[in-house]
Structures are given as structure tokens and as C-alpha cells.
Image (cartoon, rainbow, N blue to C red):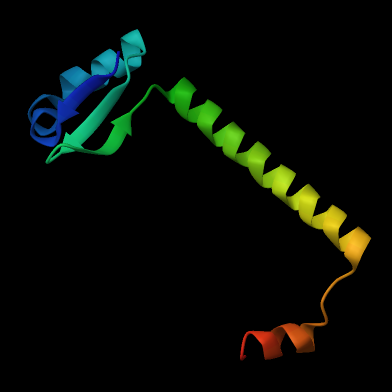
Amino acid sequence: MRNTLSDSEVREKFAEIAGHVRLAGARFAIEKDGETVAGLVPPSDLDVLEALEDRLDLLDALDALTDYRMNGGVDLKDLKADLDL
């Protein structure tokens, strides 16, 4: 079950909420007008998210390198022409 707080609740009780995040590992979705606009997560969760993002970036780079090796590249002059630069 997701812990959901309004943005006004977060403003009023930030120190208390941050303590729950830090000490208990709680996660909170912050809503404004019924829409989730942000989240509060423990630092360990943030570390995992950043590591995952780095891993996905690496996989994208490896895919691009493989494509380049298999299909060749594009001449810079042609690329600039295609982009109207």
C-alpha cells in the first residue's frame, strides 16, 4: 500500500515525514490536486534508482555502438544537412 500525502501536509509536517523516511525507510507519494507530483524515498532507494538509470544508459550506449559497428555511421556533413544546421 502506498503512503500518499498532499503537498500541504508535506509543508506542515516535513520534518516528521522526513524522519519516517530516514529512520523507517517509508516511501511517500506527494499529491497536488489529486495528481502525484513527487515522491519521498530513503537514500538507499535513490541510490538504487540512480544505479538503474546508469545501467540503462550503458545498455543504450552499447546498443548504439553495436549498431554503428554493424551499419556504419553518418557523415557529419550529412547529419547537419538532415538537421538543417
